[in-house]
Image: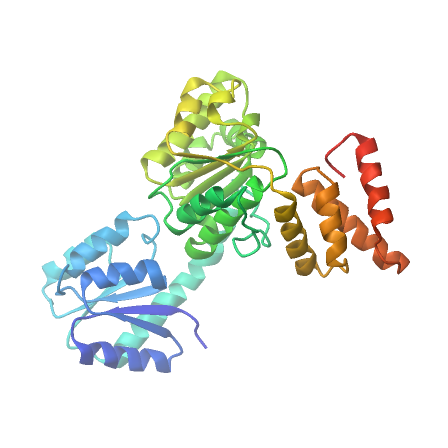
Length: 386
């Protein structure tokens, strides 16, 4: 059975219901809109796989709706079949020139409508493997860790402002807080937050609309594109993004030419109202290794500092991580660990993971003495990483 979603746009209820009924029998999911503006809203909210669009609509006609859909990178590839009483050859040519993929004149046979819809999806299915293969072969970037979402992020006084800003840009990318610059000490949640943003936007707009990478990997991909003479193609693919999220921008290349190239990409996305999110261990004005232009761009939007969590907040984070991973660590032990190990949260979680593993292997309870021994080992290493 088909799983595709179809948006039916017509101001006449009986026509909408007739089309919906016959297409639902084919297994399609149907959403409806009564006018042009409602149709544009539904496209962004419901994300249909195909649009059946009347031309003579209230608030905005089908021609104008098509123009807006084709001008927006988020919707430009959704197939459109115009279904209208405007049957002149000039009307048909005009609709197809604006970007419609097919054109049906009212009155129409519902069997023909079904056949046209099925044919459209067959063509799309045949084209998809080739398109996916082309996209997979170049500019490969990792996806954000799937478990790092807003649902798993533990909010407290140290990160509440950053969490609110991150959630705002994830829900309205490119509209507010652009660029969003997160900074703070290592291991306190910056990378988790940009992964939250990347995962939420990826789920809503699709994986091809998100680039998520460390600064080193991002610049490595740019260098590869230059060496293979594919930079223009790469920049064109970036122009279709909804989000560019780059971690640890303090490690951007120190060479002026490389930074200028990276700045061009950031600026192009910013000017296109695409969301840019970066994080660093320091605020923009303290990144002396970056050019003034790069610093100025990062300072242009929202700059938020994540602070070191309090022991209570650290305990809540540990409890949430332990529950999510099924670690058999008593809550008093988690609280004791959070209060007595002052390393960053990343290291704190690493120690808890180690304690859970030891408890599983030995079958022994995790006592304060055991925790003290592990803390002493961490401190003796003189490192915040395990």
